[in-house]
Image (tube, rainbow, N blue to C red):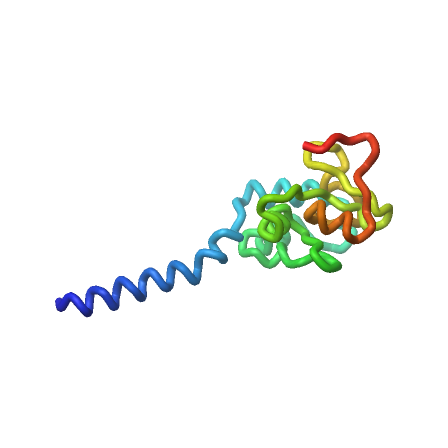
Length: 134
C-alpha cells in the first residue's frame, strides 16, 4: 500500500467519526431513558405513549427534540448542549417558575421544559422562592 492511500483511508475514517460524534453524544443509556420516563410517566400515559415506545425513541435521540418553545428542551442533555457552562433548570411553563436540580419539582411538573437559567429569566420566569441555587 502506498503512503498516500493510507493517508486517504485514515482521513476518511477520521471524517466519519467526526461527523458521527454529535449523534453518539446524544444517545442515552436505557437506564437514563427509563428514569426520564418515570419522571414524566403521568404526562406520557395521558398522551398514550408507552414506556417501551418512549425508551426506543429516547435511545436513538428522537425523544430529545426541542420541547414547545424557543430554547426549551425535553432533556437535560440537550439543554446542557445549549448552555454547557450555565445552570440547567426545569421551567414550569404554566406558572413561569423554574426549579433547580435536586428539587422535587425538577422535571416533574405537568407542563415544563429544561432550559438554561439565563433563557428562563429572559422569558420572564423566576426561580422558586423556596430553593437555593446549586
